[in-house]
Amino acid sequence: MSRPPMPPMPQVAQALILAGEQAQRAYELGLSGRFDSCITSNYAEVYARLREECRRGDRFLEWGSGLGVITALAASLGAEAYGIEIEPELVRLSEGLVERHDVPATFACGSFFPDGFGEDPELLHEDLMHDSVGADAYAELGLELTDFDLIYAFPWPGEEDLFLDLFQRGAAPGSRLLINYGSDGLRLERNTQLDEGPSR
Image (cartoon, rainbow, N blue to C red; front, side, top):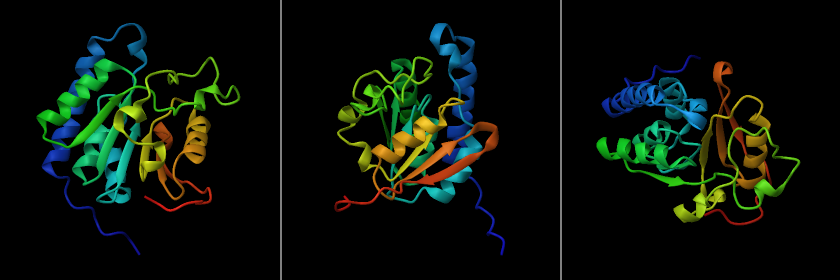
């Protein structure tokens, strides 16, 4: 049995995607130093999957939120949406995006690796592209990794297992990770650890 067709993309989502694509092009023109490794998702592709996976009222988190477009799209679908980004300039651009489009999303500047995770030498190594050292973004948000229902991540090639391990070890039982494998598409993972306490 085939799925019913998706309804047309709402105007707010179209506007966010267009703004994100324009911001990315403008940002790339001014890239220098460490920023020339910044990459973005295919916004329309991710939005289509979010429409399937993001439930109204979900607490959503984007690891490495960049320009903030995916976090804003999740908010437009009714999620309580948060993004964590280590680069202050990208956080500033993200906050401007959601303010202009009147989307209730929140961003924190810091590391999405919880305290203590970066101390395990078996998990982190010197070639890691994502910076594990930074301000405690969860403290800035007033939340813990276990407080989120759905997490989105776009790892650098070769770091997928690291993100999956962080998710399985640190996220709440039953939570979901939508992980972007680039040309290999998007995959939904569920946290399978046993729930040892009441849910929030």
